[in-house]
Amino acid sequence: MAEKVAVVAFKLACAPDLHTTRERLVFNLTRGLFDELGIDRHAIDSFVMNSNDFLDGRTISTVFLDAPSGAYLKDETKVEMDGVHAVMYGWMRIMSGQYETALVVSLALTGSQVSPYVYTQYSLSPAYERQVGLLNELSGAALQAKAYLSRRGYSEELLDLVAAKDLELAAKNPRQIRRLENAGVERVRSSGPTYEPLRELHCYPPTDAGCVVLLASEKKAAELTDKPVWIKGFGSSIDTYFFGERDLTRSPSAADAAKRAFSMAGLTDPAREIDFAEISALYAHEEPLLAESMGLLPEGEAEKAYRAGDTRPGGSLPINPSGGSLGAHAPCVGGLMRLCEAVLQLRGEAGDLQLDGARTALVHGQDGICAQQNGVVILGV
Image (tube, rainbow, N blue to C red; front, side, top):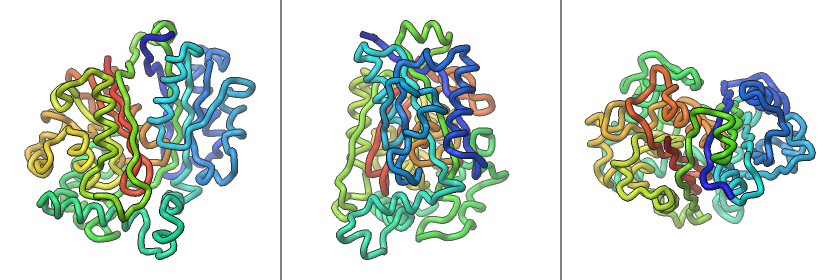
């Protein structure tokens, strides 16, 4: 049985419109990864497909992806959740001793072919919430933002500070689709309104995205790369199904997922031991809310930390040095986009966004309205 599992390599593509089909996207990413590593599909022991039938518009949708991904007549399974959960499942399959490698294949064309808001609408209770029609992903996020700011005593300017920081970093990142010049606080504050208090630049841009991530046992990783990034720990948790029963001012499931991940990774003081965090914050308020819930920032001190620059590169705990999900996000792929950015940082390959001395990272992914389900992965070198 494997003792450790590493992220060996990845391929990522994202754009407002990739002008392609799901099959062609998967083929290009997988073939590109194989060519880069000098391997073929027979080097992959297990395939973990990561997409959603609703978004794909067809039942058992991954049956059409087996051939273009190289999974034809191979061991293949599927995870219809955020991509970090597919990585967890790939880790488990390798640690079982039955496999040496696992390829996670994730995609969602929500920038050009289907609205992510329609997808999330169907996660609401069909007996009441969906029928009333007042609640959706955007209005739910706005309710959470308002409740969170009120409970903590934060000003609405915190949203502008978070978004301005992330968009400034996203502008330097070639893997982001929202790359705005001079996206400061004033530009964020003057962007178009959605639901109070959220504005357009407080919210993620729907994105076409695909990603393949290769995981390998310690033995196999040594054959494939000289820069393995190890999966040190992970955790997953979910809040109650009914929106009206949730305390929107915090995230118990993010707290629980992080606690599990920290314990597995042997971290006892995560706020000090983690060098940076890549958090899937789809709305500006979610970044501090999730950071507080996961114990990265003290509760009630997030606005102070953002004003002091603690969460920027060079601060005490950089959060989303890649620009985060306000630069690009697609369901299923979102957590993997954060994971890829963390891998680049830990390998020292993040270019203009590179942090000094980064060795341990927290990666977060989410599903559901107001981050109902959360997954946390700890990576290290």
